[in-house]
Length: 455
Image (cartoon, rainbow, N blue to C red; front, top):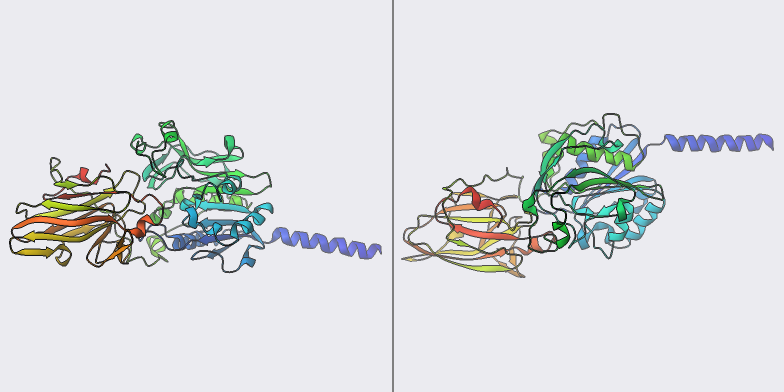
């Protein structure tokens, strides 16, 4: 009897030791393809993080692409789960019965992380949960999502910040997040002061709410971790719109460190060491109409040059364009963001026509002199992602699809007297729910750099 008991206890100890020595499993979930090429590259981003962690001792990392895990059983022995996807009402954890499944994992102390748009979730469904599970979330009519260069001058002392040096980088950094009451259990990792020009009076679901103005000049927390009462850990990171930013060592290291921390794996003294090459960044990109182009250069015309026509900020639908050309020799079609960043700013010039003394000419049938787009490439007869031009539910076959910020220049036919078009937001951008707002303008001389400034 004593010998049997001893054998049982020894077996139990060996089993416990074996379990303790087993690698901690981190599950990385990538959302579906979204936005223009080079942005919201969820699949490529997740695969890049997996590559960077493959040689870290004590962990095994699984990447699950295009929306969700391949089978529910993969969660059974998970130490941590990361979601890098679009959010809002289409958030992956809100589909089917997934919210309940994630809740079960949280009850077991599994770590949870959310990157960029995945930090946004409806306040009445998923918001209270993320607030408990990761310490905070993006709440519409409370949080904002502009593009800006965040300057992280001070890096706090925490295992997730080991080896991370002060840095500055442009991204769609969300801020004024809805954190846990009194920041209970929450530790900020990256904090910066947004510039004053981001505090605009125009009210929208992701901009200009009155609570924002009270915080002008204050530091906002853009990445954080939390420790839950159940023993689990959470992580939120609002950057990650631009895929190229994974090439920044400090940006990347903070996320890699945080993944280890929420999985309860010791973070190396100098943080997770990794190298990312331009070839690594170009690998596994979703097919969204071609490789990401370089950022468009701002025009460089005479600063005194004025637009011959300019729209108000457009938040939906379209506006008719009718401009006298007075024998102008060239035309520049300009699109800039509406002041809340360029996320989802798919813009269309629909049925652009030039009237001359001898008749009407379809501008889209002429060859442009130059064309730039904030994301991907301008397209003739299609929107910026290469799918049909659609505005307010109506499809068009004639037109030019682009994305703020954009400048498209044409040489006009002789004796041009008039330009007409419909300047429109494409439904493919507005449907994503991430602040599609643009302003259109037209010049007949090269635009100045100020033409790219938001209204």
